[in-house]
Image (cartoon, rainbow, N blue to C red):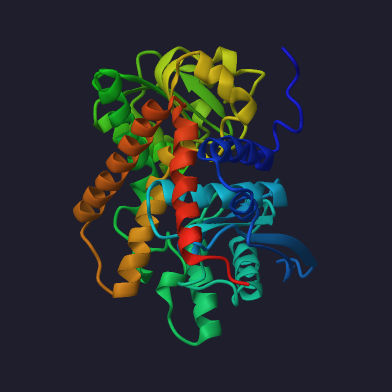
Length: 422
């Protein structure tokens, strides 16, 4: 087996590879293909802030708007030391296809700042966020580009973005961001939305494969908001969580974990996940991926499953909670193993779907009960899952390519109807 190359780990090239396969299946004309392949705009900003010690430091930030064909750009802001323009480009494109596959009226965008939030004080993070927002205030807006939280950011970050933008436009504008605190126009059910959407997709996959939920074994790599919420909801529904991992390492226990106690250990007591006293074999976050299981949920970061390790994956259903956890080079290996894939642009779309609900609620000034949010989310996820699987079966492609085809077709149709302004 050949070594994993840097090209394989370039998430933008992975996104491009899947786009090209789907575009060929759709017989997209060359002009439409070129239009949809490239971002609408890319912005680099340099963010000078005074550190708490008085020293001035300049951070680099990005914002990429991939498409506004079907609506304003939508996508998170990531604070991480390894943020790159290629990563932000890929994530923006994935947001376009994700919004289209669940048929919500957004395009795709993404942002990031190269920094390590664990080494910055709250005041320093606020300064970075406010300066980043100020630099981009003419591009942000409820009808232009609507940010949200991502790795390294949270609802407090979104509150700072909302406040900074509001100060620039001289009026409170809650709909400029989603993932906000409830007190500032956030939505009920938003925190759980991505994890809940993952569970809904897994429920649909089990029904499709005639498997039972009770006792169904699940391994979740990544124990941030997405992974931890998915673990809580899935255990409550009867799933058996046998493997977990985060940046500190992993645990495996074929008898299952007491998830509420594990969540309290990590978030209540702020202790390292691998030190959890509730049983389990310690291992690396990567090793957790390769135990036999019914459902594998990679919900951490990109490039976890590659051509170098995909042959070790032993699951029946691969439900992607992170963006781009499987490289394009690994797709064929996963498909040849007969694994039922729920691709990221479908599997983790619960978050952007409820972000859309939040945006709608902010714009109308009327807020829904959590039960109503969850009911609407269920409708969207069920319909989207059914459309992707039906297309895969009808056209003889895997679920990932089917999801891309459904999404690209919707965006291409909208483009043709609008025409190209010149």
